[in-house]
Amino acid sequence: MEDGGVLAARRGVRICVRRAVGAEPAALRRGLAAVLAMLSRAARSTSRTLVPALGSLGSRQKHSLPDLPYDYGALEPHINAQIMQLHHSKHHATYVNNLNAIEEKYLEALEKGDITAQVALQPGLKFNGGGHINHSIFWTNLSPKGGGEPKGELLEAIKCDFGSFEKFKEKLTTVSVGVQGSGWGWLGFNKEQGRLQIAACSNQDPLQGTTGLIPLLGIDVWEHAYYLQYKNVRPDYLKAIWNVINWENVTERYMACKK
Image (cartoon, rainbow, N blue to C red; front, side):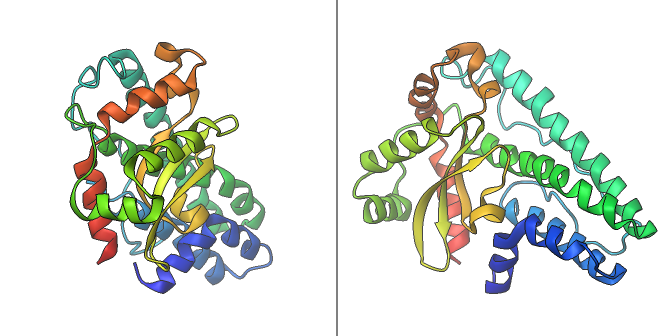
């Protein structure tokens, strides 16, 4: 991503909200385009493009629920089939449906010049757009053939930035377990500094739009990701999920963002 793109992603939805009040219609269109561009860039490395380039405000391609690259029961015994089925077909699907509905309302508000409605819709756009981005990354970060350690350049970068793979694993686990309420633990790449960083995001706040870090590995610590199997013992879920981390996918993301 170019420097300007990183800056836009870092500012995310919030700057669009601040600029919305008192803005002219042309500025509001640019604000919407910035939000949609953030969503698209943050998920560029997934198999589907979340938001197409806007040819006009009146035409858009709806977002769709991505297929899982494995069966619902493929991650057992670490994550059971019931959790995966509900998580994907219910929770993620809800984010997609809500995002589509909110975008339609936002476009209508733009056409009408209804600034109040535009501002009111921004939190929902961020929440549901973030939920779609985060889960689209999450599914590919997991694999029934996962676990173990990464190899090559990613492993060397982890050792350089965290001291060792075990120290990295311990830190990401601690950060993820420590998320207050609902949210995500992330391994991201700081393109400006050329190094790996660990971060936590609340609710469905997208990593790139919140921190500027490019997402490599996300761990969902919302209760719907583990409660049916691990109850309220989040540390047990974190211990289990390392057995299904798809290091090939994480490595692909790392190599792509270094270009």
